[in-house]
Image (cartoon, rainbow, N blue to C red; front, side):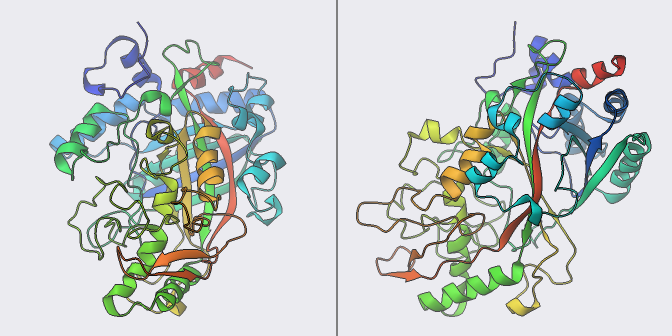
Length: 470
């Protein structure tokens, strides 16, 4: 018997190898863990035996995916709070330093810091990154919880285990933010974290019955879209891990809000309809209402996600270049059959960082917004970095010709939110679902990469086994 990776997993009834897999898998991969309060510690090793002992010593502070899922269920039924989450991963450089076989993924082995990767993603020079990201990183330890006190206590327990031969070269602190509806938002003020691939049958059932359904957009994804065998673990048949992308993305909120105003002016939008300018940049209104579904915000909570672009083949409602249309075309990209297109989606686990005095959703002038010091700690789990994260960034977001527009229609341009590279002009319709268009100035880049790396989040069995090595 082995784990069937070709479909979602029903975790409550999992037996045999599937049950063993859940007992040895880190949390936050198959299902997001609470991380409203979050810390990421980036480490560099100087002595391999100490590093291996440290990684093994983390295991008693960690929990399995099975324990996490059981805690979530218990909280739903009994209101009992779960424990903080501790996760850890190694870079390819970290594996090499420990003289352990490096996981096979080509992009992982190359690493995010390689010049070839930088050119592929159009990333800025590493010298422009924040301190701590200029030199080689070997590992990351992340700690997350719904509340600050338990997260901080667990972080302190991790710090107490770090020997003098391991340096903490950087630390990032995240703070979850919500809007008036209680939906998670990012610093531009928009609902974030929707449209996740769902790997668990129970989560699909909840999406079908407790939200707006899955009749139009089915978020089901097979396990092999996020899990890979952990070949350095005792039994790769039941011991799995995942490739983890971490990118610190600084958001210039002032510039973004100025861009919204400028686009509204160029399109001649007035009154409440000016909100549509921001929705044309993102693809959703601030409250999460999809622009392709209606011309104004105000969809019922929970945020709708059961939609596609079938009724908007010309991009007259939601522009082709809108961020969420670029990064999940929902079968409308025109370059691949929809089943192939879906394989590029990844499990995103980001959290905002940075303090600000203003309310992101308040009606304030752009001058009252922060121009730096806030952003998103972008995190995502992948089974194939080149076909998921890197494909999304390079072939979708940074590609002015994607999605492929109808004949005679100008190419969309870059993703106005996360696109990196020279930005051409883009076309927008002045009326929702109308035919009159305006070629507007490029949206200036308001998101800047300030650091990051690729990690492999190994199985608990692998980490445990390091305790006997030196």
